[in-house]
Length: 302
Length: 178
Image (cartoon, rainbow over all chains, first blue to last red; front, side, top):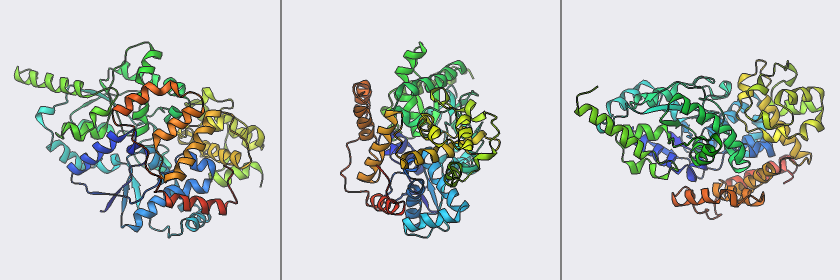
């Protein structure tokens, strides 16, 4: 399988730590990926709002580019990008007229396009379970770390487009994070919306939406929130101070990407995971949890 | 083609099957910020009230989370209808009633035309500047800058692919007002 990699604009900017940790993790698991040459933005909500045709042609431009370079599957770590890739692919397969229009503006053959997948979908397989579990490092034992997984919108929703996991109660990331030895807690805000790009429009709305997510995480007793989308991370990590002010409780909950959690547990260098880029630094908590585990082991307590 | 048919032609789903169960409105994270709730938009579309829909805040307040579409028992695709309404509103010269949204979308496309991909900090900075709230997020911007999460803007030498595509779409759709 020839895997393509589509980072998307966020991973080149505000979510650079997702890019760093994802590439490190994929390399550590011996998955070779090729970045799609000269990729362009997926257009998110802006392109389809301007013109529905542009909104389909922009993501498909990238998929076509991948196909021309012999790529069979495109890995898109940003769930917003992934959603637009899948939406466009589905639309052209449903509607031959739209397909003709898109093919005309793209000037290419739109048959047998590579499939787009989220890295969760790629890694949520038995062979990677064995691989991750076999490579866990004893000094990085995270069994005392309590995590909640936050999927946000487009990992599995809408089911008809994403065709992965459960739309209302997804579990793939729960499993992946638990393979890394972390305790995953059940909670109620798994698939709530963080407000995404409204962070740049009306940050006060983001604070409104995210405070419910944090209230649920605190109530559940989570040490960290694990995410798989750059926008979820940006909103929960960067706006935490404002959210704490509005909630009236101090918040110091690190927000980690699943790639960082697994990467840490299998012993990747901290530098390869981008922890230092977080507003709420997760490293002290991770070290503390590993240390307390070590102490307990030394004292023979299990 | 009447208004409902225009929406359906773009969204690819039948709006007329909506039976007003209001699942879309109750699941919508932005409903409290909307003048018309998603179910009301769906009803207005069925009644052909174009001006009411295209002039609403609701179509611009949608974040595209697709909770409505995922939960719709009739597969009427409210999120697709809202997206279709946005494009019709742009085409027919309705200015988004929410100023900041207009600024953001325009800035986003302008940045894409410059380099194919967007430079997030430029789009954010321009949006905040033009909505007169630049100072509000400055402390946060500094924190992100020292952590290397704000990168210098790229030189505008890329993005030929997008510019070419944009032009072709513009010709095909006979000019997009922007």
